[in-house]
Structure formats: C-alpha cells, structure tokens
Image 1 (cartoon, rainbow, N blue to C red):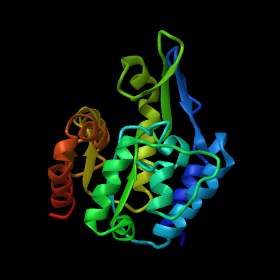
Image 2: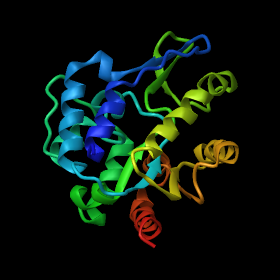
Image 3: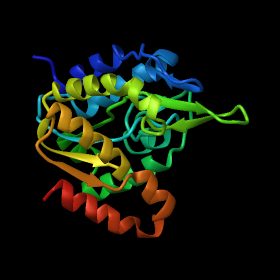
Image 4: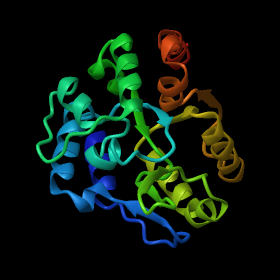
Length: 228
C-alpha cells in the first residue's frame, strides 16, 4: 500500500491540464517548468506525509504563481518552505502573503508536523492560472473570475477533487477557504455529492490584505473550527 506522500507525489507528477482556456488566460505547471519544484515537493511530502493517516481536507482556490505556482506546495512560498519546513529552494525566491498567514496559524496550531499530520491542503484547480492585463503584464487569476474560464475548467476541477479524495481523505467535513470559492464548491458538491458538510473560512489573502490587524482573531477562528 502506498503512503499518503507517495500518492500525492504521483498525483503531482502526472498533473497536466490539456483543456481549453478563454483568450488571455494561461495555466502554469511548476512541475513541468522547474525540475527543482519536483525535488522540493517530494521532500516536503516525504517529510510530513510519509504515513497512511486519514486527514481532513482544506480546499483553496487555485495556486498563486508566487506560492504553490513555484514550490508545488499549497500556500507555501520559498521563504516559509525554508524557514519553517527546512527545505531550501535554490532556483527561486518568493514571498506570498497567504503563506504568511497560513504558517502563523500553523505555528499556533502546534507546528508544521502536528498540522500536516491531520490536514491536507490543495485546490480544485491545482495549477496556477494567470490572465493577461491590458498593459500586457500577467496577473494571478482565480478559476471563478470569468464565466467561460469556469466552464472550461469545471470537469477538470471535479476530477481533481475526486482524485484528492481518493488519497484517503475524510469527507465528513471539508474546509473551504474563501466565501466566493465556497459558492462554487457548494455548486460542485450538489452535483457530485463529494462531501457531507462544508465549513467556510476566510481566505488567508483576504485576511492579510484587509484584516491584518485582526489576524490573531482569524487564527483563533481557524483553530477552533479545524479542531471543534
């Protein structure tokens, strides 16, 4: 029987998006773009998930190009990967504000080892999406930002959620980050009956961007809901 780590690594190594996208959208796959991403991703999952434990599922939106879009590890930029997880990425240096909040919460929870022993974080669309702005620059995008985009990626998202669940996740309650994200996850859940109960938490980016002075209150909320 494969460990949780081996199953996640297999999932990530095989991850491809070959579907259509609206004009001016692109998908970034760090596992194809940077060989070191595969290396640090494997090291992370072997360190924290080398067992067959049943974990609770925390669902993000889709990776940021500065977080998992580089490291391959949800809500983990290179700074937190090195300073908290002890894994150095030499080919990139990134700072992602969602990662700051998440790892503050993880520290309050009891540390990375204790947290990852009980929880698995990923996204229904597990690759970074970028959108071309009017000035020609590329910006982070969410799967729900455009009606045509969601329509194009919906079947891939459902398949991804089912593959995450097949790792052996607890489906009695799922934790969804972001209220708008939860609206779409609820829609998918009604169609596919994936989870018994959905609990919504404010997204780390929202907290850091708009409620940073109250971050401690949100950390307390996270921990109380994750461990009722």
